[in-house]
Length: 535
Image (cartoon, rainbow, N blue to C red; front, side):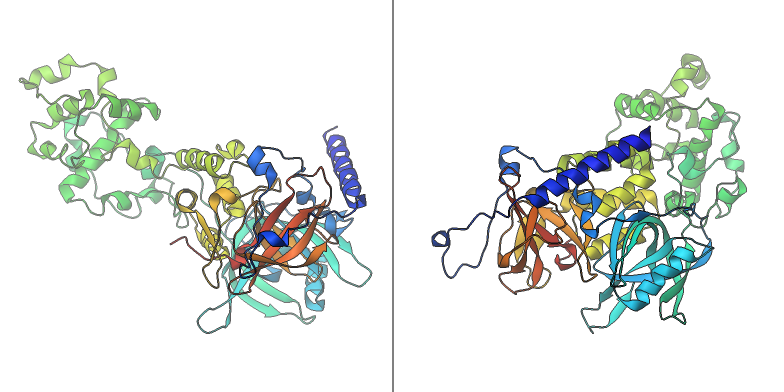
């Protein structure tokens, strides 16, 4: 039943495409008297963004109907284990960064890459799988450089054309490291790749620092007998992973601590093992109930532990958020219940420090920033899957291609999410990569595809372009008349758009071919021609 509904929806969408293509091309003329002769700036504003009207079906662009009818593949390969090594055909793409779960259309016209597709369709070890690597030209010496981190792409649909070329729709699967590459006897590029062992999203602080042996009671002084910190501690308890760069190791917290402070930190950590598991809300209650000045160093509240007799009193004082010290030592443990003792911080650092690297907390922050800044598509369904969320945001974020390659190369989930949050908060200007001319701002973004404000499309000559869509742009000159054929957005005709300052092709202007279609026009800007302002 579910497949029938999907097929019915696709038939309806294809019917809409046919209706749009049957319409007569109608392009709004620009009044030449309104623009001065010396001003090459071409401005347009989509009424949909200004008035809230929007009649275009964004799911049409995601179908890539310009490729024509394609056939589905079968017997797809399941996900490979991290660390697996295999040989696959390689595709070198300029200006494109593929992420897991992202769609990549290809029109393969060169004989060596056609042979690579044919090889992928019939190979046994990794059926229907190719490796996608970004290539770029070094701005200093002009040499071609290949990235060493790429993504496997599974061929989901394909079509052989009469001229021998092949139309392909692929989907990103898993990140990999390129170990070596060569040309086979047919001239198709191949490579030996190793699948990256992705880390798992972790909650903190308990999973971030690893499991430590229980302590019978905090005041027993066992912390003085605990073994020193060493790099094999996580492995000792079955949590070690050399590729888990996201996990917050003990060394990352304690490398700067003195030996006495390290023992105190351990005592605070293991004290929670004698209690039942607590939720993250316990830490929030501590923050709300504590009256400790925020400007004080976290070391200040624990230094008095080293004096011996004051350890118990200071621990309870922190739990209750009081400045006064108990006058009689023997009365310390009689006055306070076990519930109050549970409020003692479970680690040396406050909870907000651990939440900075908590994958789930970061996922909520990233989804919230995305909803606030980009709005569509919604990321709420991925909040409980931080790993997928980090890839989805990276694949749809309208930033330069070099910044997106940077995101692909980040191994840790939490580190990738932190970088994405930083980019979402700081990203504002879109400039020409060649001359730094301001083209648009973040507020000019327009989502014309259900896949987001940035997507990959391929032209009839086989060149793949990742474009970000804008309802308004400055400093662009439109070249030639609108063309309907091979439009990436059904119902819109395209015209080439160049930078008015340096005459570099930055993208295209898409103009509606139907009166009722809104927005009336919008811009598609190539991410490969956008200046990198992420640093």
